[in-house]
Length: 175
Image (cartoon, rainbow, N blue to C red):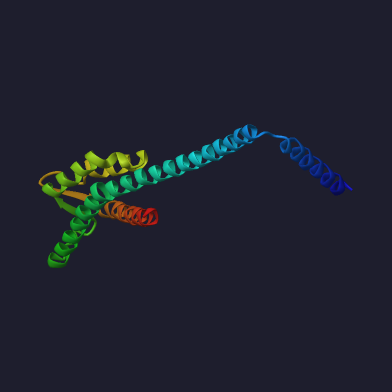
């Protein structure tokens, strides 16, 4: 019942529009055409602006990810992984029980790691930042060789590795 009423209303509107436009002069047609053209141009510009904004956001995100990988996650992973590998090599050679729960890092590597963390640690979430800072600032033993609890050190090394991989996947998706 509603459908015939809608069809009749639609037909009436169409007929009314056609009746009103059929008596337009050429200048009225030009005005109507220019108004329609202005609406079309406005819609096109709005679409272009939206696309440009989305691309700019993706570009900034891509740059941020590249910087995080290059300046933070890559160097931290390499330094920490090297410390783990060196400690495991030392264990194999000495077979010492003392080294089993400790990761050793020479002071030069520690300085590099700390400088990377200070320079680019702002990319970490605040809780992660605090946890890694606590690990790096409070080793088991100070001195030329820094010693860290193995389980905690390896936990953060794995976390950094996983984040690094996640960011690589995200970067590939943005490319």
